Amino acid sequence: GDSVTQMEGPVTLSEEAFLTINCTYTATGYPSLFWYVQYPGEGLQLLLKATKADDKGSNKGFEATYRKETTSFHLEKGSVQVSDSAVYFCALSDQNTGFQKLVFGTGTRLLVSP
Amino acid sequence: DAMVIQNPRYQVTQFGKPVTLSCSQTLNHNVMYWYQQKSSQAPKLLFHYYDKDFNNEADTPDNFQSRRPNTSFCFLDIRSPGLGDAAMYLCATSPEPGRSNQPQHFGDGTRLSIL
Image 1 (cartoon, helix red, strand yellow):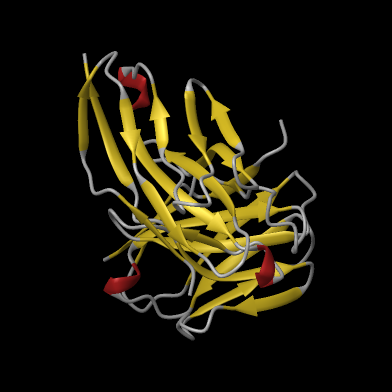
Image 2 (image 1 turned 30 degrees about the vertical axis):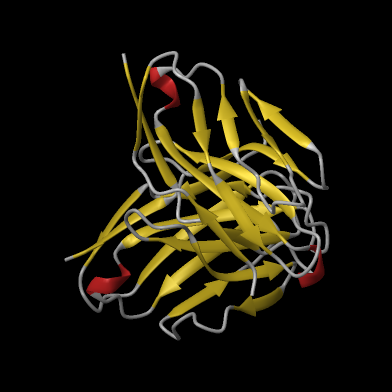
């Protein structure tokens, strides 16, 4: 079945450091790929998405590129802030399932210190 | 702002005492989902509704039921909560099935504690 693998956390960075959170996927069809962010005590918010190979999703300084050849969708940000501390989930949605079933990775906690 | 609203944010119930969690949406989306998220884990889909059609995940326990009286509201009923059901419950919506490039919109969740 479809699956998503994320790097284990927590990822601990100082403010203004460069961020990479790795995400790879396995899917039988042609999935859409998403990054969701979850702040403490809150639900999930869509951070960015990409729907086909070579698409780049971007939002709030974060970006990720859909790489079909490496089945990856790594999240990057050039300069993190304390307010970026949260849990980040990579997810896919396969077009062949007939409805939008999200398959999530296990999440990566990011801690940014001043 | 159009949104997904879950009530209450925190719910405490006793072991074995039925509990209902509610979700409402102003997005007019056809599909509503319920997820269970345990501490430090990814959300796990329990079931979803497409309009009035109910779709249960194969591994969702019978203890969990759902109702959708109209487009805007959806309820999660836990008939006899056990200690293992303590979790965050997330409601989400999406416009329609078969459009996997459309993101789901999540509420802030209800954190359920079992005494």
